[in-house]
Length: 156
Ligand SMILES: CC(C)(COP(=O)(O)OP(=O)(O)OC[C@H]1O[C@@H](n2cnc3c(N)ncnc32)[C@H](O)[C@@H]1OP(=O)(O)O)[C@@H](O)C(=O)NCCC(=O)NCCS
Image (cartoon, rainbow, N blue to C red):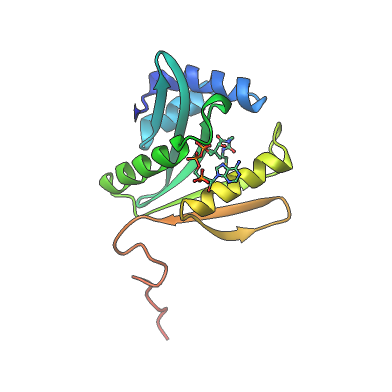
């Protein structure tokens, strides 16, 4: 497991097309890899996992996509990838991460979507917003990041 670099974009895109059955924009992925911490994991030469995002605010990152290859699921790899990225994000100065999970994405199924939601809740991410088709998840990463910390009341 190591941090991703823009040169990993082509292999990430291949994994998305193969496993998620939807198109992937290599250039957009490369831009994300260049602008925020990410993780890629290999089994030998084969890429089997990734997690990448982009800055959302100076201290908040929007995690855009995570995938563990179907051949490597339910072995704790997802948990290890999330633990590592959360630590790297803290080191990079991020105080919170957000992400979305949607049943409306091309190529997904209700079962895959519910698996991912169960996984995120287990990882300690909180559902902050839900529409009929999507949820927004939030993870607080460090001091001053809790919703009740640092909120300044508007002047009366
Ligand atoms: C969701 C995903 C990342 C989980 O990765 P993983 O490596 O299989 O997860 P782990 O083995 O680390 O599982 C950690 C915990 O998550 C939960 N979990 C994982 N898969 C689950 C499933 N199919 N059903 C219910 N809970 C599940 C469990 O609590 C599990 O702990 P346990 O094995 O001790 O019960 C993986 O299934 C995946 O890549 N899915 C397709 C892409 C996707 O949905 N990405 C997220 C988009 S929002």
